[in-house]
Length: 318
Image (cartoon, rainbow, N blue to C red):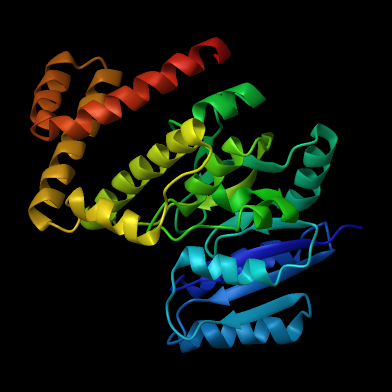
């Protein structure tokens, strides 16, 4: 039986959610796993004790404690450096895996000769109540390959990937957000095959509390930067990523300027309201909100362009 290395980074997740997440891996029908957990907040003594108790009770757990907070990407890379399995799986510290998730993903990957697979998901609230089923529009290989440059449709905590593949790509690169999106696009430009198991194998936690304006802006511009690196690789065979270049890009885009953060947030909020009104057939509300969103014309234009390209790709698969 092939070993699977499951990687998890923990920061400040509630203890109850963390227990559910860890238990959903330890109780998998597929038993040949090593569970590498990184605590990226060494000051969180409550979580540290919980993880220590788990690692003492189950020898499959490898517990790492960072000296200081180093972020998700670097924590996952630290775990990856110790992975000895033939496959690597991801798990978030507040989500829940179906108990046959790993078994199903291995079977699907090997039968279809994929290099990485992910699955559909069920969104749940903080209490575990089902909110919605989230399925991608098509499970076709071509759909996934063509739509990824415009929309990150891969559910990160559901992935299973060949260890030699993720290590060949040197794991995750150091972004403040969307580290996974960069990895999926590097898989594409390296010629690796990505597939989606057509069933929900992960329950994805939607937690209360809106994301900060600054973080939302960083996510937006980081995804935009990552797409530019993808097209650079397509054209040149390599990209110009460096942490310094990435930081300079964010600074140039004004993500640390509170005034610009507010302008971006207002514009996107009005745009989202406009799209909701449009879906409901509320023409006046749509026009009112869309016009207000144009105070951030450059951002709105980019979102519209990306959305139109994605929909054009999606049409043949509907």
